Length: 599
Image (cartoon, rainbow, N blue to C red):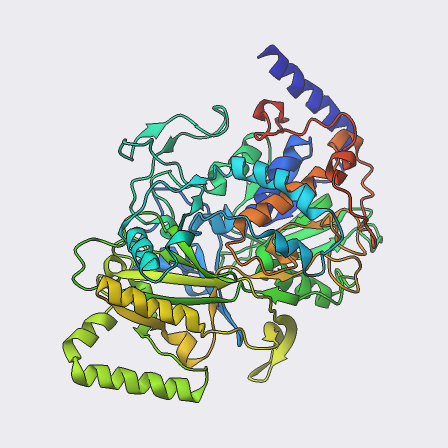
């Protein structure tokens, strides 16, 4: 304990030297509290910096989370409509993007699936050759996995058993895997629902309760089993001095002191995100900024700041190389099935049906049936008018032949108990572009719009597997209405838009996540990912943020002159040599006792 106190005093003395006369409100302001933002806040506080986190969403607890998706006002995030939840859907011409908005970012609503991508992703895209990624990334993945409590899923629900059975029937049984998840699970042979002191951070974190297999991960875990960021990275960051400002939307970031490159610091302006009348504007100053508002959020904010004249030198590559994991949502409804298929964890297992394509079994908790309004009978065919015509023919034919059965399939009630969602993802590369433009129907302001080739919504292999699944399980294969009518896929895995590259002519940040043309400015979220991962990206975003923060020196040793490099040669031990001697980077992966307590 005495050594702990001594370390804290040492960090406090270091900090007072680094901060000088405290002419800035904070050393760093982190915009967003998702995976990249929470990692950044935690690691920066650990290095002795004064950190603020600006989060547009609300803070959630087990007491105020919705029980089902029918609590629309507590599930959906559309504050201008009075909806102040944590889940949002943004509709574009090429894709519908599903994302979270909360203190803890997407971790509140994500399925807690944490998978590393295949090594080949480091050999493609604009980040290729900028570092020895294959040598560097494993240790950052290891740290991220420990911090997020990644473990193999022990809880196989009815949907997982069905997936395994069907995979064996069609010859893919050997590819079946239990998901790697960030969920606190009971020991073998024990029931869930038991509460324990912090099992992850040596007693520095909150108490936790083992999973009860309710399937409610994506509705926000009300039982303390899911390793959300507000119980991990962000919890530790706040505990040791970071200040989190919930319901706070950043509207401007501009360099101070007449220095356009930000070398004299930044002014960050905010408004209350949930206010209808009084915006409750705020102004904060800092030496450095970390954009971590998600791929969509960061890209949109930087477009706005570029247009305002605040950050005019952001690369013209902004908004390019946006990827979606090439996803398709299909499923099987099982009326009369003897078991409740909503039981288990949100994504408990998966299979590979070829080298590029894998399918995961997904579920919502019992009672969360809103998504059932978007499902319809399975329809094959190439996207376009012919597929719509085929869908209408199939639907009308089904209603005429089996009216009661068809209406039962289409009704939302009991949907979660009877529906196995099959999430199909492909690692084949493809991308679209986000632009900041006026729309013909509303020329008074600019919006984020998409351009490029259509992302495939029809994956024949996935439809074929859904049909086999339905035959084996005794159900009916189904599609998503928006994918058929509008040829628009849905994705919860939007990445890219501010990709890593060797220069501003090819990307927005360098391999250390530093924004080209600015000093002490970084981006740490999914927008920097420069290749299609083909798996859920949360673990990779976390590992990349860990790597980015490893290059930032302790507060007492910084000269506040960190600028992007146009050419950075690969080095397998770059992140070790980048940290100055004396850095006490923790590895709780670090001991939390070494964190500086800020006041």
